[in-house]
Length: 257
Image 1 (cartoon, one colour):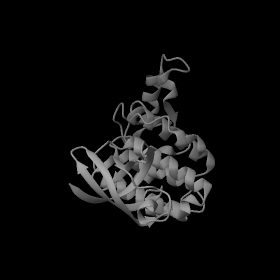
Image 2 (cartoon, one colour):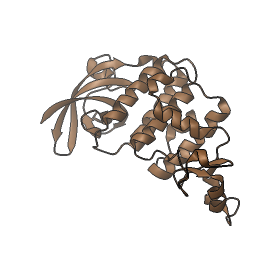
Image 3 (spheres, helix red, strand yellow):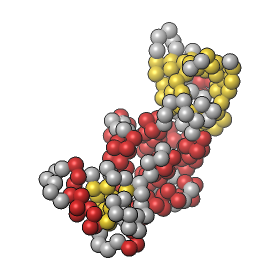
Image 4 (cartoon, one colour):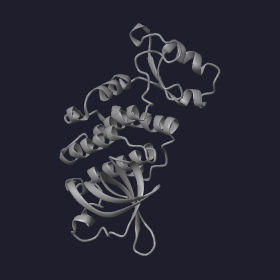
């Protein structure tokens, strides 16, 4: 069966006989692996559509659970991302992170549109690139169904505004923990126990930042930039949270950002 779909290339894998396997995030089929004999060199419409940071249309031959890309054309090229090292590295990290979050063969049109919005903002952003990445990741957690509970304690259920004392974020429990329950969770544990190391004190307003990122459209965050300390704290939390709840870890491009 011949069909076509809009898509974004997540990764290329070279195989034998001048063929390659394309990990394609398609609007119609979700994340798929498609073989192709098309080359990615030169300036033909097909070769340009197989490059990173390109939004394209792909003609697919579908045979049961296998796909082959017969032809491709560029719908929009975000070429400016490749002209800036910082943008390129952060963009590559987002593509790899997204690939690990997506399930094979499950359409995710919301995530697809979110990734297009991310490319558009990244291409034109001059500063605060890390903040844009964190906002994207927060929204991706929401689409993946593992967004942390931020409005009430995940242990006792008490609304956050009714909880006295410090606020905490628990990675294993998936959200906000009041000071009383946090004390009970870590009581009896050693200093380096999992119970302690996976509970973060909300010293930098991470809870409110996560709520804001989840609620506000990505397009409206183009002028928002976190300070370096807060950004690093949130970055570490999201990495550990995604590793715990989505088994997203060992991202090769992570060390470059």
